[in-house]
Image 1 (cartoon, rainbow over the protein chains, first blue to last red):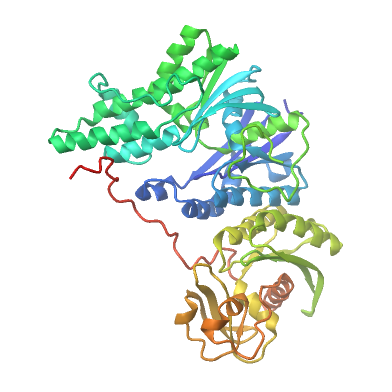
Image 2 (image 1 turned 90 degrees about the vertical axis):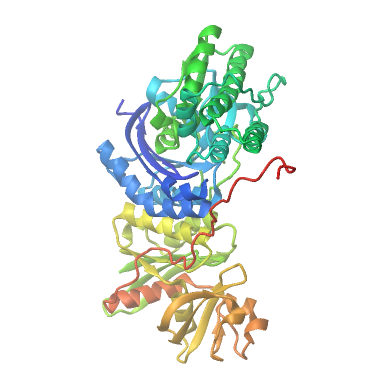
Length: 344
Length: 225
């Protein structure tokens, strides 16, 4: 293994400063500094707060990752960094630092795609991905269904959310139900106690013949339900509402993902992104994949959320594919399309 | 002693390599810059490569880094600081901060009092008063030009040019408009030679992030009382 290049991955697209070291499919060091606590009172990520935190955390996080890996900066063979999509000011901190490390160490720089990184990270846990693989990315910022023919060179978008991301819907519904931010874990917990039977919320873009998603109508339906209960003076059964909301989200996500595998004749589904930690999503995906004869791969929660490991993992693929390094005038791209695993 | 200086706290991206002799004499080895407020992240690293090549050195030859710490628009400012932190970290050399307005003031070479100001956006300016090109009086501040008492002193910098009508432009030219890394390198080397402490390479934001805590969620049924 040691003849494979040591790749340092740097991720700053949202509120986590992530740095990791990867050799092939082996994760050697993985450090994350999160500014999530500073965003809680605002009920969402504040870009300027996140950018300030990235600048403070950048070099200390690099050294924590190096220490874990038992490596020195001079051991690094290549540097991969998230070029997009993500928050403009946040991306720029990571890209600026990555360029400086590449310049000073005389090593190649690779600006890579955050979304494809979420798929690539699974290789660190379950080994090389079969080609092709279908991937469902669900997080606070993204809800995308992809066909990954080759991580470094050939990723096709099958569908995307047309409005809110799934994680964003969780955050907004949590606010309606007076649950804390971020909304995923408390809603998941409440839903496990609740019973969805009495309430049926809509399934956005269900059976519309596309692989697109929509969650804003669902969020509005929850708001209506809450307001109606308040108007009637009925007590709000938060656990049951959470269960019905979660059921609607995971039903559409898993149905469309498994349908995509079946329609395209693909035997493997990867689910990644922060929402992949959700217990109901995992359970229903397992059930439906089993029925359809599809292998389900979900990285452990630590690897599903934003981190440097996903960027290093994709960087290692890009290096192995022999793709050209990015120039030092590499620009960040807040809406880098998923069909560009390597930014140009 | 070789020092790389750069600043990205204004619309300019400016880079220089300077050298000081044992007697403190300053030699500018190379400098380059451009003005493009939206492309700091793309321009800075290639300009550093070009300037070090023109100076006939490699990054490994450097002894110090000096970076503009603002104040200045935050996204551009952080490009310089993130670059400086990582370069110094990888090269194992010290990194110093230089207040961007101090570099602008130093470049004027003025011997009498004046005010330096740069654009802070949102109809405000970052500004400071100087007794001469080396001596700042008080702290750097951010204010609306109309609410600012310049004491009738000569004004320099792009902020003075932008708000000349509000500030009452003097007979002097506001040049230089932007900081110049050549002046920043000379100022940093001068201070280091004199044994003075330079600021830490941390950003001078002067404003808090303008985020507001959310109120109650909006009602979706407008007819509900």
